[in-house]
Length: 340
Image (cartoon, rainbow, N blue to C red; front, top):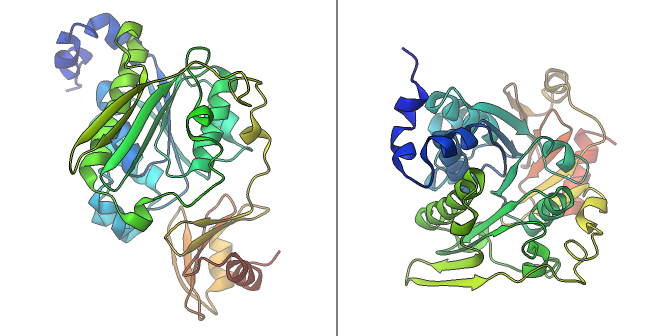
């Protein structure tokens, strides 16, 4: 017997700031989550359980053993099958709430596709793990006038803020261009799962406030937490800065930047290379199997190279060269086995 909305959302609708009318607004909302790692899995779970109308999820990666400690939607079978994170998440979430329209995008998010990913979207939730993609989301959201709920977590600390075009400053005003590098990441200093849950939950509650139109209840600040020794701070967000190239002069530099052909994934001994054309995985299995050990599923192909590294091919033309952080070495292996 189907589950009715009154049954599924009864406790949520009893909460007066939401109520039946707020639930209807949530159920008509379209939300994009970019990055289906630690933050993204918690965000997506909250959105689906709350009953958003459409949830679009975009992620470039697949499930690995180290993800299981904190990425709540994945299990050992997903690792064994090397499932893309967006696909694995979609399968889990469809069993939680079959009424939500789930759109799974297995792709890197770049200046070439970000605006298409945002078509028809009301709200963007940040589940990413790098400044480059966050600034891309920031510029696309402020160009489109779509709120962005920023979040980041590493070690035992995290930050989150809701950034609203025309009301608050943008993320670029808060963190700069991110060009300095050298920041801590989960792959270099680790992360504990509770800080991920806490930050993503703060992101989710701000998203719900926005969807139901409860503007007065929004936190309106940059929340910073450290949960091992426990420190917290909520800094009031400034307004848009006149000289900011995003929310001031409206140049949106991340949208006009060239897509990065080769990028090192910090701390993972992996270089991602974006190829010029899509891959037919079946054909590439035939081409690479004489010299490599191959495993393939409908979403990716893994080739263990005689040199010791591994190539992971995706249908969209991306290749992960695993086992090196040296772009020159990665490019050499790519050219050797994939060609130009």
